Length: 220
Image 1 (spheres, one colour):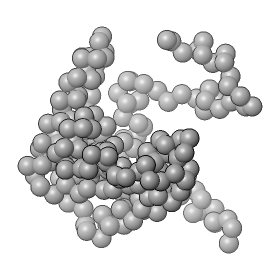
Image 2 (cartoon, rainbow, N blue to C red):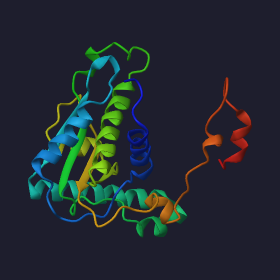
Image 3 (cartoon, rainbow, N blue to C red):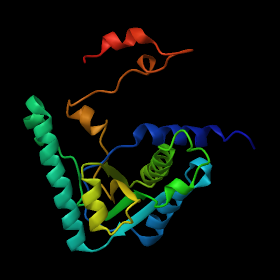
Image 4 (cartoon, one colour):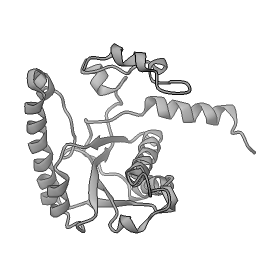
């Protein structure tokens, strides 16, 4: 069968539309079988040259979790300072759920990536794109399972790498908060909090080349 039935297709589009970057969690742990399903969904992600560059580190030590939180909070403060006049507005946002979520994972790029040339000779960043695809797979599977997930990128990757004893040429790219939630946000949280809004699709799709007139539509 080449085409899924209408109900299955609708479910795929619905989970894409209703996926949310969650920051509010209940403390309940995830069932081991559920966590394994989510990790398997990630592992089915596409990767350039089939290199599968993702590595997932499950954080089960509470002291280690608190140290990761400290790294995230440190970067949160630095980000706030860099935002200038929006500092106070930013500090009112909840930007992570590291201490509250039922499961905490760190997604990292593998070591020895330079050995993989297929698909990366002119675009070495495709290994990062592959990890992002794996994370998106997990995100959509989590939403379908009724589990919240948040991608936290506020941390110093060198410091987190040292904390987790990563090889020198491996690199953490995401702290992933997973857990049960009271409810999912009705719209993306940053849109809900008036931080930003989603741009219209027609402003982001060009034809046969770059639409340079669009540059005038956005402030420098």
